[in-house]
Amino acid sequence: MVTLLLTRQPLTAAVWLSFGNGLILSDLRFTGTDERGNEYIKPVPPARFYTAIFLVVLAVLLLGLQVYLDFQK
Image 1 (cartoon, rainbow, N blue to C red):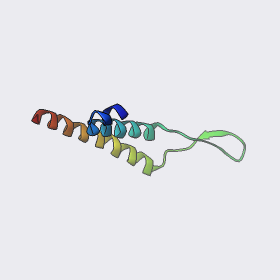
Image 2: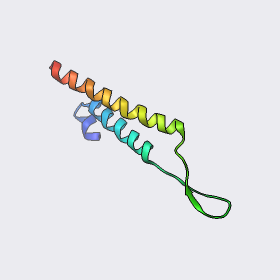
Image 3: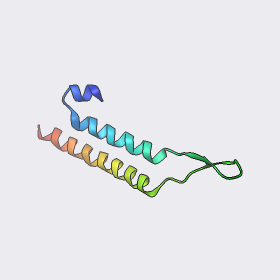
Image 4: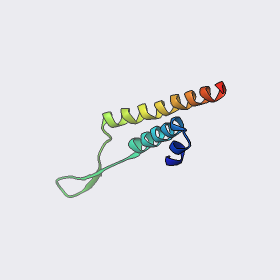
């Protein structure tokens, strides 16, 4: 990402950041312990799920913008 920013391609860096963070948020699972000491996987909160979807959609839109701008040159 630093290389993309140094080569003046911030839009491409934003695409990668948005897509990567969206994937991390959608797949990240936490475990908890119930009152009997058993471990279980906590459900993904809806806000985190919707944020992940938004970031992946944003990455696709930014990628479309990048392609459009590349064809304009």
